[in-house]
Image 1 (cartoon, rainbow, N blue to C red):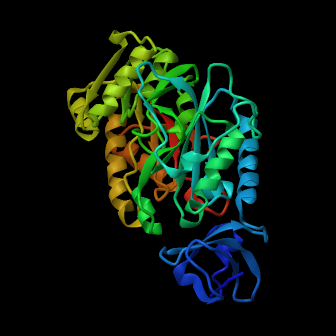
Image 2: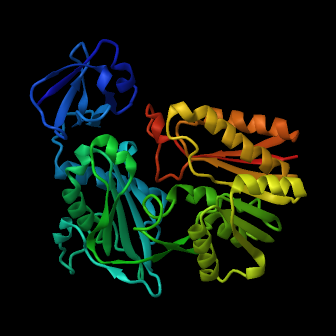
Image 3: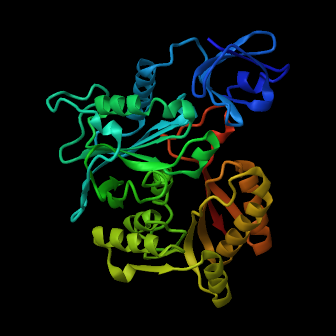
Length: 430
């Protein structure tokens, strides 16, 4: 096994639980290896630290897969995926619910993201057949899945897969076969169309790897029907990470007029209406997102008089509402990440503060703010500090009621701060 020897004092972060070895932390490489191979990592004192995938083209030179000396093969990956499933079974009804099965490094599967959507084809969907070589995988139709109980009657499993590291990408075909065995899915798609793959020297790719995918599926979230486009939607098709935070609206929205800013496909808006909001205004700059919000509202039989949708720039709209003194009982802010690197944190701070200041200003006395950030570079302390500054500038006392994070199927690995990325604060403006 090729050995990666770190420089002096470069092992502390690894010993604390972080799974990445950066290129500038390596003293030398002992032995020969090819990109994507498995290597051993040792401290300058020759203390064994773990085993992982090497990629000479990436600043993240080694991604640690195991702290032991396991053989890293298809059998190892299957065991890890079984462990990930067992954790989800404790927190969700995975026979009928959608969930994130694998959350990369936090599930000790660096670079691998697997989302499982439980649903049925949407009316009028056009089926998309296999479009990649891994589609040669087949399954005995009489065999039971070996990973979890069968899906509930009338529900099929649709899997969205991302392999964001070179080492994991080399196992992609094996992973597809494992997922077929564990889940018995209707279809598996890859959403490797993320620009971050370029940092690993990997091309972008998107398509059906196994089975036949309907153009759209309908999944259920807390009794709400949601349309999901696995190939055309953002990320892996839907934002499962906000599921628990959407349910957290229930105690706060009854009888209130709600603004859902950056509404995407309307999931916060639909939850607000389910939990008794008097009305919802759903806004997104994307006309396609607004159209999907309208379709989701119709799918759930929402009274058109209770929901207003518009395609607009949220920054400009909040200023307009402030100027016109329009008030809401609850405002949801769920913007895209304002920064994807450390250099842009201060600019992100200004952006987050601006929208939160305007949102606080248009809240009724005693109204509620649900404010989110999905950038791991903008940490929880920074996010809370920004909210305090925004409340101060708005001259409104702000009471913090809940500090929330991503859903439980997106676990946070101690020592690996990058795995904590989603913040959601529920507060009351007096």
